[in-house]
Length: 140
Image (cartoon, rainbow, N blue to C red; front, side, top):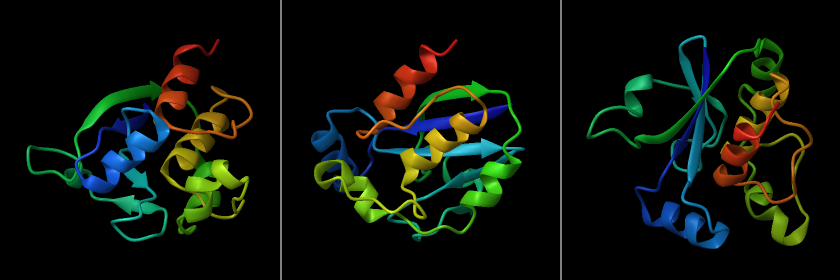
């Protein structure tokens, strides 16, 4: 079972993300075949795997507040995403319509995983964890 984890903020930067976006989530990660992946501005800027224990326990970097489980083969998604760079412009690009199609921030990576599994369609211009959660809950 694949999973998209949505996290509430544990840092000032995360709180700023929530305030700007009006969403309760500041980060996301994807679990595929038992391995966690994410793109983070604070733990290195490439999209790659992270030890699962980084996200778990009371002293973990973050604890997931919402977990979206789904089926699907994500091999192509992982091949495309692995080691791509963090998309700073994309993270705020909805303000300026600026983004780099070869870089991804955490919510873009999660959206692409759900696209690969045919759960969501075209990526909206304004993408947050709340948008992902709502699209997941309303898919056919």
